[in-house]
Image (cartoon, rainbow, N blue to C red; front, top):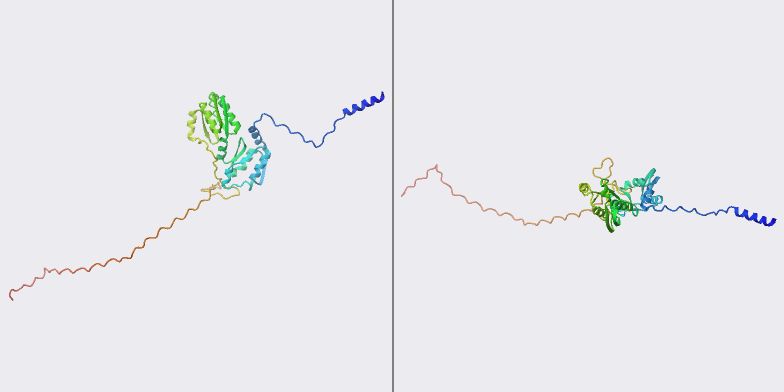
Length: 310
């Protein structure tokens, strides 16, 4: 009986012993939170507070570093290169402590007169007009069937990153049910048509689509901007492109930035005037000599008396 008891005891000790740890196994990353919209995740990442220090770095290096930190796609508008911007030149010198990534990026882009903003495709860098055009002309699809206008407009803003603002004075007018289907249209067009169906009106103020009553919209029109047009409106860089040609300033005071202008095309020289026609050297004819006038009798002297027959 002693042998079986020893075997049972050994088996119990083996079962109670901890399993050996497996070395070299990588930790399993946490699964991303479900239900978070990509645009919301991008906004949260760009709101992260970090140090940003760049010494003699290029714009390309800044963008690459930002991609690694925020895990957000970043695109530069190709139109900004036509004025001499070279993103590979080491022209960045920046040292910021504990700033939001989006704020640090804006400070880094300021010398280039560039702006950044979120779109459905990620972070877009361009001039102010170029960024506005990109955001407001994103292609969207609308399928509203009795949807409250305010809810439809808010969803478009969330999906695209654009500024769609409802007048807070609308009250119940902003919740009017709308029914509209649109396929692959610019965001600005979709907002304007939705507002029209809801008996409202949208006006563009810079990069904001403001929806209000038709009466207020009419009053805002003199100071409003025209609808965006296809293509980016790229403007020159004030103060010159860092590392590029200098600025041409008119009335620049206290180091204020000038405006880079394209090199003027030299005007073609004016053709020389046609040679004057040679005129023959014609000498004027000599005037004929004047004929002597007959002498007039002097009344003071009496004429001699003629004697007849003598």
